[in-house]
Length: 260
Length: 315
Image: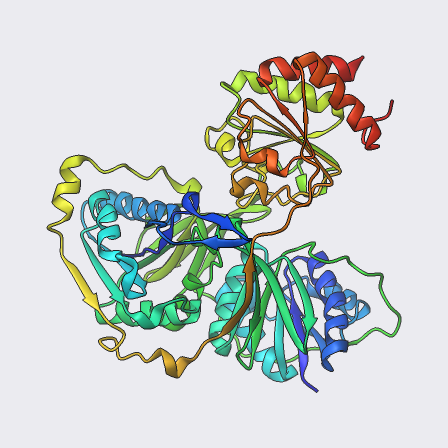
């Protein structure tokens, strides 16, 4: 079975600072999203269960994101090879443009049996790219998987919805997105990190894929992107635990939250 | 006339969005259509007509069985053409988010998901959603001819039904059943907790050293008649169930009182509490970011502060 796992590299959100309500992204490193690591782990477990197969990590981003270096981590985890679509025109690309590039890259690298995504990216979490790619490739899709098993010529997927757990079956090829409950991603060993550098990486530009994003055009306009303003009292209650408890109880009564 | 088309598989969300769409449509000079799809959609269709839809497109086509994303997206695309809709509002449930994206791709449309707020500004719908992991709120418009928005349930009030119900029509859709089939469906465990509706919440974070110690948090919640919530970190330890999680990957709450115990205040958690009317924080680290968000802060060890507070509240 050939599994393509789509991997987005995101700014490390723990490192994002807010200055004058604006996010400061300078010097913030990029890393592989947590849900994408879950997707890679799921692919490795499927390959191991089948006793063989091929895992391709595919990433689409603007050229300056150092994707190749970031993708070493998923190669070290166990992906067999990486395909990178890097192009300046992908800077703040819409999910529709990213899906188009993924669909073309999948076709160009010979298709696949299973196309895996995280249910959303760590940064913007729009969750659109998996669905859009499924539509472009005309494939059945199952989102929010918490368990994937091979069943006959297809797959059986248990998925976590808002109010229910569903078990579904689909033929292959199919698109599946995963949630964090699906597994605990492995941490690569030093040996595997060293080996990762030797695994094949294929690079494409949009021109290689025959794509011109200018022809597609932008789909959204971001008017502003600012931190929310919070107006809080920030009163610190002093003293030992007993005094603090008393002061808080009194404050809650004054605020009308507690009855005397 | 061009229309705003509304769809959600959740009936209360469909009513909520239809009612709000009426207001947007008025400001934009559009009409309102709604779609009711699947085996039990007839009753839902009547409701949507009473909540502001001029036309309700009802389909009970057997291919819609199981409401698989590929088929529902195709059904909605056909209804979009029939209704000459330029804008589609879908409920941003998990099912709805998946659907909105596939539909948008079919329509060549831009799409915004997880929309938490929406308004008409300068003749365009402007959607607000969290970005950068909750650090910011992005205000976005869609600039393609067709537009798709997935709006979070409970973003708006559900208005009362109006008289003069809209017409229900039954279009003949050309649908092929999905290749995806349902083997089993079962309700999730632990659905009893609805933190989004809770009036008081005690939230527990990694400041608790071990699982048994959460009993202190429970006692405080009892004394305050509050629900128990937690950070994702605590749920990852499996100390509480997922439905207790507050924040980006859990409930968005708006209680009268939120008491954050042993919670540092990472943005991934605080996006779920920023609408609380009053926030109290207990943390041993005086520099913890949670204090920037608190109305009342207590710097201290929760193992000292909580027993004192529980005693005081019970007195």
